Length: 491
Image 1 (cartoon, one colour):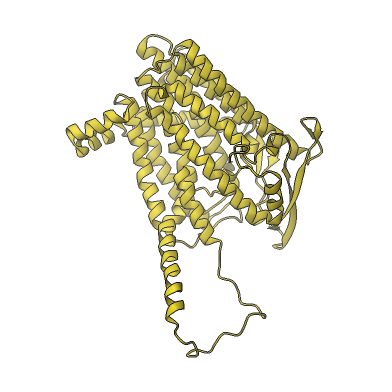
Image 2 (image 1 turned 90 degrees about the vertical axis):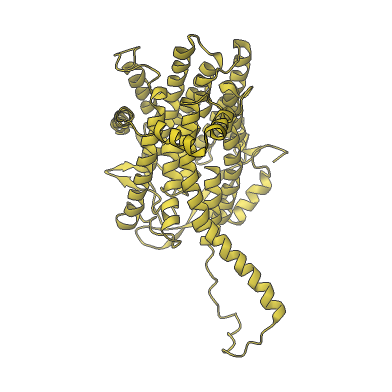
């Protein structure tokens, strides 16, 4: 999604910059015919206009269209490479040279066609997740949107995590015997085929819903045409039959699939090779613990840039429905076909480093969440919390008037070292998973950590752009207080 974020950020910058309204202090416009042509100024102004026009077309049409064509294809190729081929890109390329691109395309197409078993698997998976979605819990709220909406969420992520894990393992040969534990691996190509088709259709439904029957005030067309609206989405907080679409798709489906896929792929590795692969097993455990951390912190995620800025369109919703199951599981899936090659000592060493990243990531997220919930009235690392009180304006949905609000920007603890130090910890974990999945002798398992590095570096820039627009000089003060983005003293 890093490239998706880049295209979306580019068009946002252009879309939120309307022409300035003339004020009384401006000189009156010259009557028509009074202007005298100036070749120097005319040529200087025409070049930016042409460049601006091309940038708009690329950001609003060409870029989104390219992503909407290439990313679904990539997911199908990745499923084929790990489940039908030998889990290497070189093998796929060699196949293309030997038999031709057309013949390879046929193999990929037919191997990733939706299957009835994959469709049933997904239906049961999501039906059970939907039942757990309504598990009771404390109601918490997201931040106020610019149009005055404040979404509410039931904080029951841990219940979902525990119950879904027990149901998945309980239905396998370790419990009721309805399926083998490697079921997600065995039906993965058909699963991606089903998700691809459903994801594209579901985004079309969300596009129409945002225009015809939105769930709140933050909805409507961007004004950049159908292609961009389908790509970016037409609604910020869509709900269907009382179910928050972002919470269910982003958290209850994609993150859960990623979490359980680690268990399933580790089992597939054992069944295929007849022994435990230390790299695959420890990778699955590390990812599982990381996602337990995610569900503890789920409300924090619902207040993050993914939720409060990105609308529910192809970029956000298809990305979570298809890209996450395909790419975020890639390293573990690749190690089923080609073992990690790691012994227990080497794998444990990498696992411990990755687990430290998971723990520190949780510590940083929890530190900020506690700070927000205490409204700054707490100590961080034994000292009174230091923060910037930033003000912003948002529309009151009831009165339709603009009102001033405040946010507290933490500058103590981990958040005093860098504004997004938690990304460093997350990347430590991600690179450990790539290495545990066979990245010591193959490039394919390193795709996810490389992708995530680009994603998080770009996201840090997006967040800075968003906060400067929202808080203005207050955020500039915060940047002076905490000058580094991700790595203290380096970046």
